Length: 130
Ligand SMILES: Cc1cc2nc3c(=O)[nH]c(=O)nc-3n(C[C@H](O)[C@H](O)[C@H](O)COP(=O)(O)O)c2cc1C
Image (cartoon, rainbow, N blue to C red; front, side, top):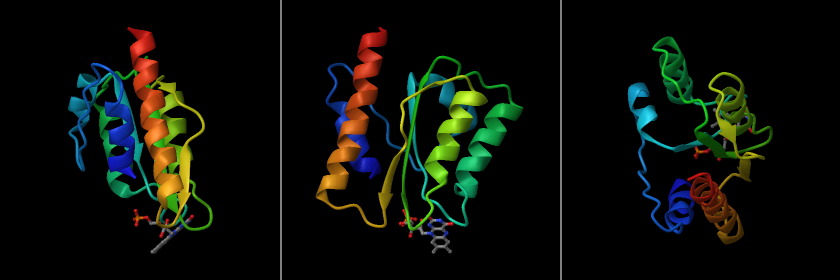
């Protein structure tokens, strides 16, 4: 899913994309848009994602006005991407791209196209913001 989102985001002229499994909370300020992939486990986002936001908040990292998007695979309830987007919007005052993108279990080609579209929407929002 992340690869397809990144692919879609790269389609915007002049948009640079960095795909990372891990990022230091301080480094989040270096980006104009942050897209988080979060599968749902036990009705929650993964602990690594939670820690990233907790540490960014504790350090006073400002993400205000940056574009935020969330996506993730799920089995039956799919809370994680919704929670991620909620934190981006309410805690960090980011501009959220709604709705979060949820895919049941392993994404098929249609689902991957939806991921590409999400990436594209984010890059278009960035281009219009400049
Ligand atoms: C231990 C465990 C707990 C899970 N808990 C949830 C859950 O609370 N809600 C949900 O929608 N899916 C749940 N799932 C399903 C996963 O979200 C689903 O398998 C998803 O595709 C995993 O994505 P990943 O392979 O990228 O980690 C759970 C799966 C496992 C193995």
